[in-house]
Structures are given as C-alpha cells and as structure tokens.
Image (cartoon, rainbow, N blue to C red; front, side):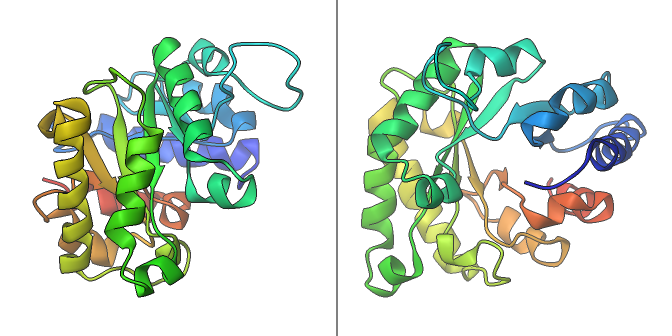
Length: 237
C-alpha cells in the first residue's frame, strides 16, 4: 500500500527503460502495484517485456463485494499474474488456505497465473514446525489440476520487513521441501517457479538466488526503488 500515480509511473518507467536497454536479460520481471496504479503502470510498461500483476483478487467473478476486485477485472486491465495468500492477507484479513485456494482457482479461470504465498511465523519456526506449516499451507492452497500454471512464493513471516533473512541453508531446506511436495501435488514440480520473499535486498539476493531450489524473489520494500529492484534482478542468471 505505497505510491501515488506519479510514484508508480516513475518507478515503472524507470524499470521499463532499463529493460528495453537490456539486450538479453537473464530474468523475467513482474510488478504488482496497488490497484489504483494498474492502468497507468500498464501504460508505462508497454513494450518493455515486464509483466503486470495484481496484489490480490476476490474468489468471485462479479457481484455485491464492495471494495473487492475480481481476477477477471485484473485481466481486463492487462494483468497476467495475481498474488494470493500473501502473509499480510492471511494475518490482517484472516484468510485461510481454503480462501487462498478459491482465489487461486478464480485467477486460473480468468487466465491469470496465481502467485501462491506460504510461510511460517517466528513462533512456528522456533517450535521446529516450519516444514510442517509450509507443507500444510501448500496442500490447502493449491487448486486441483493446476499443473504448472502457478507460481509458489515462500515468505517466512518473521523475515518480512524486519531485515532478517534465513540462512541460505534454511532457505534451501524449505524450498527443497516445497519442491518435493509439488511433485506429489502437481506432477510438474520442475516447471513451477518457487520464489523466496522476505527482506530481499541487492546485497543478499545473489546468495539466495544461487540456491538450487530458489527460482526468483518476491520483493517487498526494495521494489520501491528502481536501483534496488534492478540490482536484485541482475543477481539472477
């Protein structure tokens, strides 16, 4: 929940200019601005190769749901992706795995790729339950028959906006477990991108993105600065 129209257009334009000037980027880039900025950001990104996504969607296609936005509406303004089940939605809005799953199903029905978020709290990690919690969230949040038409993002709740990050070994352990679970749940584990999110910055991105089961980053605060976001992207490859 950051940014005026001017801020959003400036950020998107800065990223688009860098992407257009890059002959062969080793990464794909997606930006998911607040809903008020989607149309203007879509215009700024036009022809750059950067994808557009929403930060959330409703499970229903339309109806009496004041203040909500459907996946179909997101697709209508040019989105290809939508984040569902972000830890802040789970915590602040009480979203359960079943709710997240219904939103992911709605995204798929609208032709969008859902970025499905999972992650444990500090108390759950300290209790040794990180893999159990993440595995349960993953199983409960994935739509049936999604195959490889999803993205999964692991975001340890205790690392979001705190400046703390898991050690590379800890991050890889969870990502490897997610990949193993995806084998059984989808049969397409190697084709599904599994992202890491939680205080990703230019100075720690390379150590995280070089791990075998981390395919990219779900970037929070660092995405608000062109130089930082681009620096993280350049850590790929």
